[in-house]
Image 1 (cartoon, rainbow, N blue to C red):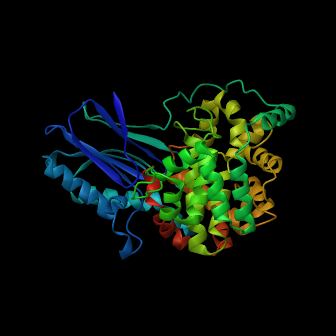
Image 2: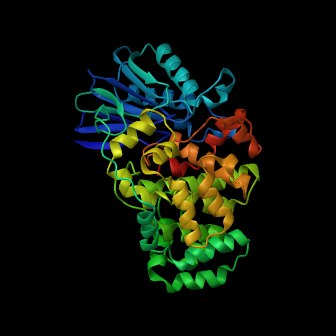
Image 3: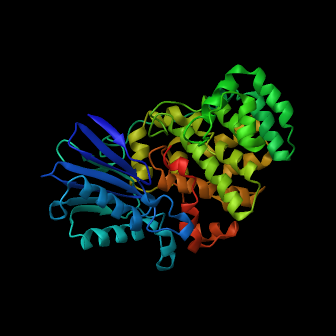
Length: 441
């Protein structure tokens, strides 16, 4: 049976068909509603409780207060009868351990409250609700049987015992680093240019044009939904005109790294290409946070976000051999990823990432961010940059949970906000600022 994923800020309404609609949920809230008698139903994937300002209502499906009424209206117009509707509600996981003063971080809880109020006011029976906690889940609606299910994201059996985990030796790690295909020299050149704040776009554009493989990748990425370029891009010169120097440089680095990340759906990835999708999303959110806070250069933030999990490339094969255990320990038990890696593999992806950065002679500020992005207060080179990437990684891990196996430590969340000049009360606004193409990517 075909599965159709509903991304954040979207809903699907359908009549009876041989299909399952589903949403992967962390802090987001998903709602299925159906009228079995009329054979109509659907699913909505909500990101926030309500708009953070009057300027943000251009995509009302993102918010529970505006999106859920639209979803219900679409069901009524399709023939559903209010008194026959039944609903399932899932998601709304907590960002981290919260105190009574941390309600600003409980986005999922407030979204759930609005959802339940609207459904109750409409007289719609909530058959089942699994919300809150710290786990991620998948909500699905079978459009043939009209049955809803709430399951852990992966279909694997997480109750079985601990698998035999192959612990790599440092010799093996070093050999893996040496044997990795190097990222293209043009990408390294751009990364260093960005870190030094020295641009030479004409020389770079000339190099890109001479590399047919990179050119093709950049043009394809330009035309993808993720970057949202409205006009068709068919050449590097056209890309430079439409995107500008800054975004073209970012695209070249991104396109250069795409093949570097594994495509497999095992290991750290929860979907095909999950590692790259997570890296790209973290880069784009890092750039946005840098622009919002003015704490660091947005160019450097994008680059650091793109490279933050590069160490996972080396460890991916070891995670793949014991994926159920790592999934259970991180996403089900809520243990920080670094703690599980340290315990079972003897080394973390952040440490390996720093070794890779040193191997490639990347700037110290990038290496420092890769090493400390899970615990940004440990940064010794650029505290602000490391905190920006931490925050972007956290948002990706909690609001776009279907990409990558990840669990971020949140014990010092409020103080980490303060390091880049933000307050907990601004958390909803920050989430509302996530580029929409990431949510739909």
